[in-house]
Amino acid sequence: MKENLYQYILGIADNSLILGQRLGELCGHGPSLETDIACTNISLDLLGQVRNYYQYAAKIANDGRTEDDIAMLRNEREYLNVLLVEQPNTDFGYIIARQFLFDVYHLMFLNELQKSNDLTLSAIATKSIKEVSYHQRFSSDWIKRLGDGTEESRSRIQSAIDELWTYTDELFHLTEADEVMVSEGIGVDVTKLKEHYYKKVNDILEEATIQVPESKYFQKGGKKGIHTEHMGYILTDLQYMQRTYPNMEW
Amino acid sequence: MSEEQIKNLEEQFEARIARDEKIEPKDWMPEKYRQTHIRQISQHAHSEIVGMLPEGNWITRAPSLRRKVALLAKVQDEAGHGLYLYSACETLGISRDVLYEQLHSGKAKYSSIFNYPTVTWADMGAIGWLVDGAAIINQVPLCSTSFGPYARAMVRVCKEESFHQRQGYEIMLKLCNGTPEQKEMAQDALNRWWWPSLMMLGPTDDASVHTEQSMKWKLKRKTNDELRQQFIDQTVPQADILGLTIPDPDLKWNEERGSYDFGEIDWDEFWQVVKGHGPCNKERMKARVGAWERGEWVRDAAMAYAEKQQERKEKQAV
Ligand SMILES: [Fe+2]
Ligand SMILES: [Fe+2]
Ligand SMILES: [Fe+2]
Image 1 (tube, each protein chain N blue to C red):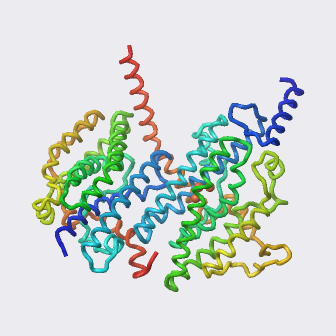
Image 2 (cartoon, chains in turn green, red):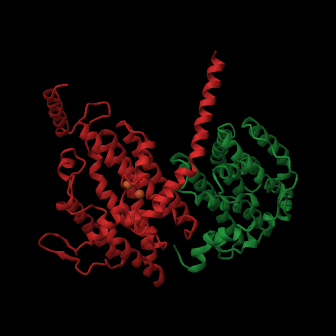
Image 3 (cartoon, rainbow over the protein chains, first blue to last red):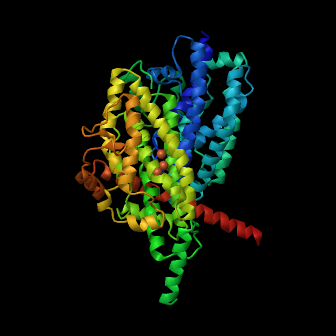
C-alpha cells in the first residue's frame, strides 16, 4: 500500500470530518433559521467532500475496509485532523471564528491541491472549491458582522479569535507523509501558504475591527494524532453505531 | 364600511373560493379567514422547526457517512419548509418574531408527534416512513387550498416530504434485511411510532372543532378520520413488505369496506401530549427557547452592522 498517500488523504479528510461533525451538533439550535440552515449546509458540504477522500483512501488501502470503516473505526491516536477543528461550539462567536480560521486555510489549500499530480486528489479539490469559497464568504461576512456589530458581539468574537488563535500555526506544519507527498508533486507545501494566510486573516480581522492576537504560543499535535480532550467525546458520538453494532450494513 | 357592504364582500369572497380562485395577500379577506390561516400556517411552520430536533438528535451518531449526509440534508429541508411557511404567514401581516414569541410562550401549537423521543437509529427510518408519510397525507390536499402563498409553499414542501418518506422507508428496509438485531430495532421503532403517527392526523371528527369552516376554505378536503383511514390502508402493505407487525391486535382487512379496521386510539395520551405533558414537550421548548435566547446577541449584532453599513452608504452618497 502507498502508506504515505494513504496518511496524506486521511490528514485532509479528517479535518473536514471532524469540523462537519462539530457543525452537525448545531442543527436545530442556531441563533436564527438562516444561520442554522447555513451551518448545516457547510456541514453537509464538508461531509460530502469527506466521502470522496475516504473512498479514495479505501481504494489505496485495498484491504477490504470501506469509507465508513476508515472514517469511523480508527482509534483516537489515528485521527490526523488539526486541533482547531475539534474545538467546541462554545457560542456562535467560536463557531464563526473556528470556521473562518479554517476556511481561509482550506480554500488556499484546495487551490494548491488542484495542481496535484494525483488526478483523484486534484479532481476532488476542483469539485470542492466552489463550496469552500462559499464557506469562506459566509464566515468572513459573519466575522465582520460580529466584529463591527455591537459591543457585546465584538467582545465575544474577540475572545473567540484570541482563544482559537493558538491552533492556527499547526495548519502549516508538515508531517513526514506530507513531506514525501510534496516531494512527489502530490501534496501541497503548506509552509508556503502561511504568510498569505496570515495576511488575509489579518486584513479581514482589521476590517471587522477585531484585534489581531499577538500571542506567539501555539499548540500542535493533531496532525500526529495527539488531540485535545474534546476528541474522545466527538469520536464517542461518531463511532457509536459502528462500535455498538459491528459488521452491519445501514 | 356598512354591515351590508361587508356582507357583500364576504359573499363575493366565498364565491371566489368556491370557483377555485386563489386568494392573494393583497386581496380583501374576512378577519376570521386571516386569523385561521395565521394559526394554521404558523402551526405548520413551528412543526417543521421543532421537528428538526428529534432527528437532529441522531446526526452526530448516524451509522454511516452516507446516512449522516442524507439525514443532515433532510433536517435542512425541514428548516427550509419552516422558512417558506413563515414567509407565507408573514404575508398575512404578522412578523416572524411575533410567531416565535407565540411558540415560545406556549400559545401556538406544533405537531405533537415531535414530543416523542428518538431513542434508536431505527427511529430515523420510522419517522421518515410514518411521520413524513402522515404529513404528506395531511398536506397533499393543501396544494390546492384557497390561500395562494400557502398552496404554493405546499407544492414545494410535498415534493420534498415524499423524498423523505422514501428515504425513511429505505432505512427501514435496510434494517429489515439486516441482522436479527437490526430487524428488532426496526420493529421496536414501529411499535413506538405507530400510534403517535395515527394521532398525528388529528382528533376524531366528532371531537374536531374546525372542520366545517376549514372545508369551505379548502384548508381541509377530507376529515381527520378519512385521512387516518387512508394512511392506514396505505401503510399496512408497506409494513408487510418489511416483514414488520403493526402493533394493533385489532387490525384486520374489512372486505366489505375495502379498508382496514383498526383498534382504539388512546386519546387520553393524545390530549396529554397536546396539553404539554408528553415525554419531550419540555425539552423541545427548552431547546427552541434556549437557541433563541442564546442567539439574541447575534441577531442584534447583525442588525447593528446592517444599520452601520446603511449609514456609511448614505454618507458616501452625500
Ligand atoms: Fe417538512
Ligand atoms: Fe411538514
Ligand atoms: Fe420531511
